[in-house]
Structure formats: C-alpha cells, structure tokens
Image (tube, rainbow, N blue to C red; front, side):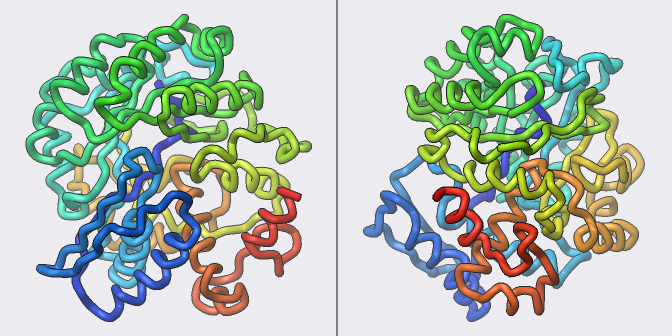
Length: 415
C-alpha cells in the first residue's frame, strides 16, 4: 500500500470555452505561472477554436502544466457557484484492501480482503460528476493484486484513458505488464528511503524491485516516486529518494504522515521542532514540494489556517464502497452500493456538509487536499493583496502574523 498521506495531486488538461470569464481566469492562473516557470517553452501555440485550448510543452515530466492550473481555476468557479453540478478533478479509488506489504505507517493489510468489482468501477466512472478529464487513480492495498485488476484496467484503457496506477512494485512483472498492456497515463511508485529504510518501514525487502520497475519503464510512461516523511524515516531518506528521482530524471512527490482511520494508522503526527531547518537542499530541485513541506511547521503549531476547498473537487472511494468527505475525517457522504456517486457527491445533504467543512476544517496536512489550497491562495496572492482576497475567500493566515503573505513566508524561511 502506498502511504495514504502521499497522494497524487494532478489537475488534468481540460477543455475550455472562449468566454470573457475564462479569459480572466487565464490571466489569474496562467500568466503568473508562465512568468515563473523555469525552462518554459514559449514558442508553443495557445488557440481557442472550436471551444478547445491546445497546449504543447516539451517538459513531459512537469508535475503540473500551465493548463493544470487553468483547469484548477475553472473547476473552482464551477464547483463554487454550481454546487449541485460539481465535477471532479481527481477521483482516488482504493479498489482493494489486498496488500502484500506489512507497512508500519498503514495497516490496511490487516483488514479482511474486500474489493470493488469491475461493475462497481464502471458505474463510478460513468457518473456525471466524472468528466473525461477527471484523473481516476487506482490503488489499494496493492491494486495489481485485485482479483479483476486486468479487466478493470482493460475497460479503463478503452473507456477512460485518463487513469493512473499506484503501486508498491513488490510484484514488478505484474506492474510492468499492466503498464505495457493497459497504458495508464501515469505510474506512481512508493519509495520511502534506501534499502534498509524500505524494509524497516514496509516490512518487505522491496527496494530492488522498485528500482527494477523504474529502470524498465522510465522511458515508456511518466513515473513519480512517492515519498512519505513519517515516524519511521527521516529527512536523510527524503534526500536519498530525491537523488534517486534525479538519477532517473523522473518526478518525486512528497507527503507527510497523517493519522487516517481507514488505514488503521498507529502513531501520532510528526512534531515540528526545527522542521524547516532539516529540509534537504535538493528539495529545491523538485517541483511543488518545498512550500508544502515548509508550511507543515506552521500548520502543526496551529499558526496556519486555510479553508479546505479541495473537498469540492477531489474524492476518494474505499474498498467497502464508502465515500468519505475527505481523506482525514470519519464523515461518510454515502456508499456506492446504496447510492449513485452523483447522489453521494452532489446531493443536497452532501453539499451542506461540504459547505460546512470547507469553511471550518483545517484539521490535516494531507497533500491530496492541502496542496490544492496552497496553490489556490498562492495564485490569488500573485494578483491581489491579501486583504482583498479575504473579502471573497474569508480570513486565512500562513503564520502567526495574520498579515504575512505566502511569498513573504517563503522568503523568510529561505534566508
């Protein structure tokens, strides 16, 4: 099982209509991004004919592209002003509890085996709230051990190509065959340190198998190493995994351990003593990781307070069919065996709960949710002063200084 606190956070390239409000969104979310991206290729063409934007960028391994940010902005508007017609940016399906790892940071392997069926997956993905651009993530447990894994991936490869596979790679040949036969759009691979750390943290000697999969597939599919900082590893392990990603020229995504009931986590949260000072320097060679990690210290101390807006565009489904409001809270919106996903996600009771918690909850630092909030406010602050943002967004703060901005905080910790 990949650590539940190291979830992917992908915004898909989306279709746009050529309207004034969307041009304003482009100015808000795209222009600042283009200005700051390193090695951005400017001689690409952006067009709006036939209600479609095309963008081509030669950096295939970028964590987020320009139009990922645009899609984020447009989705934010739609899901805010049309709460009964929300669309999902990402849908993470924990399709099975079966897992051969014996992780210290996740005890899903202790559950009775349970899996969502192929028919369940078909109904879920055919929901109105799932668009062609929704990123559907398959994981578990270990998804390739699902009794119908091949059938599910075969169906998705024909009916929803925008799906990703998440794996611990302990059965490397299964993972390699799955990628080559069913062509997921992205492969996420768990790696929490060197060989000794891997075995200590996951209870299996799997380091070489992870490297085997990476070396075999790195030129065939975008790969991300998923690292989770936890009570069982440290910042030296983070530095090690970043160097592995650099060696193979692949992406790395960093999460921080969180207590999640579904995964029967046993340890408390990491403390934040001198947290920022211990972050390895090579994290600056990665994309979209440093701010998330550096802000943990402020959140853990109770200084950082952001609304949780991601629950209106990101969703998970558990192997028993339950659909929680988020990864962290034990608040269940419904069960796909009893209701449709559209009723669960966009029904009136769920909209009321989402409205309540998106304003009040600041209770986790799970990157599946909180990267969304960081990116959203970061982009707002690139155009507007903080006091003006608070007029429509509500009060928020990055540190104990309520006037501090995102850029101001990042500058202060880098000095």
